[in-house]
Image (cartoon, rainbow, N blue to C red; front, side, top):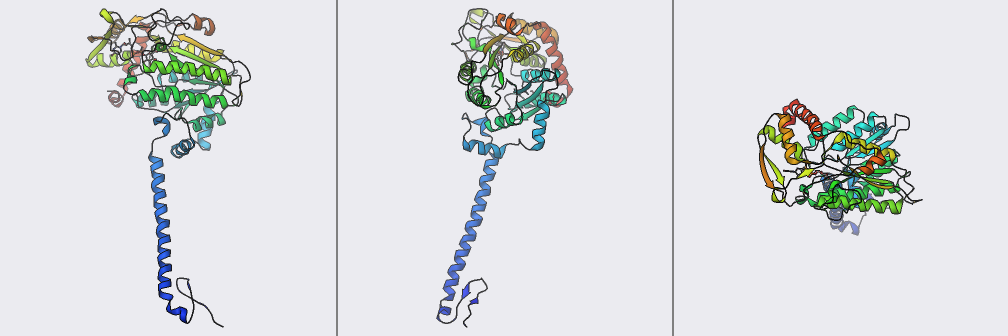
Length: 445
Ligand SMILES: O=C(O)[C@H]1O[C@H](OP(=O)(O)OP(=O)(O)OC[C@H]2O[C@@H](n3ccc(=O)[nH]c3=O)[C@H](O)[C@@H]2O)[C@H](O)[C@@H](O)[C@@H]1O
């Protein structure tokens, strides 16, 4: 019986004539095997490079205007840090209602100025609160981290993520049936829109649509309260500004994106039955405020002896703002949440007409910017180095003044803090916060 011998490579060899051809045959097989090995290692290597690339690319939620596509969500799920049983437990615990008749609220922009105050106030009264914030670096993220630490001490967990990340938003609604959303995440600031217009489109338009999309599909749908802005009145010169006044002449891209948000809210209310309340905030100030706002950086620069640029209108006209203290704004936000009716849709389908509201939240007493500076001088016991400048044409308007009758009637909104009192509280906070540690001080320079 002829037995086939097996070569050491595992290749069968045969006796006789075939034996003469064995060498080239083996060479070819060896060569093919080496090629297969090379291909395998190359694929593995390329795969690793691709994986590394995907992991190191920043989330599209912070850099693109597009809503989620299949590719986007794959990439997000690779770069995201959210998820897992521990994370879900934190989300649930933070959102847990601890008072009779309480609500569970998703607060976007919770590490922001107004967001941090609203979250703390909701938590204090026993509502469930979950924060969401992308901790971007529009201004010093260390200040946002300090606000986060403070909130965490009171039991509010802030999920680190972007409102454009629909997969994350959906996940949050899978874990918690939020009754309300307080949407405060936005690209704020009037003048910065000239430098970075894309960030306004990304946050205030794409981000808002992304949030509404998830809310309209949630079951049950939440009621939504969100921050619009007094800047929508733009070049309107009929004072005080009433919600019925025209808002079709925005003076900045920021204002235009907030106005667009109000129209988008109308659409989602009309098609899907979402209950939506927009709040037009008037120049909010106070402790834990935004360093990009005038009252904040005037304080810093007066203390440093640096010049303070004060804008004036045509013919040295007064520039004034209806400065509104943050605690008053918080009362308006809570009043809006408490009076918000339920959304009427479910699973993306409208079942009946839903509430759609818009309110001014101002202080009803405009104060010239020069007076703001004088108050700060008194509180800081230091003269400002004033430099009067013609108001640049980059988004500012000459004055704002709120008519708050509607908010008074519907929300019981009644501001009680004048600028002098509110700035005193701000300055006390500022001095204590920035003297606390040298590193904090340096971070804002
Ligand atoms: O109420 C609003 O809708 C808006 O209020 C503020 O916008 P603004 O009122 O322009 O607030 P600041 O940037 O703090 O300016 C306050 C006043 O100081 C003036 N200013 C600002 C900067 C400066 O260098 N000098 C100066 O005189 C401005 O013209 C304005 O009258 C916020 O920055 C916006 O995010 C918000 O939406």
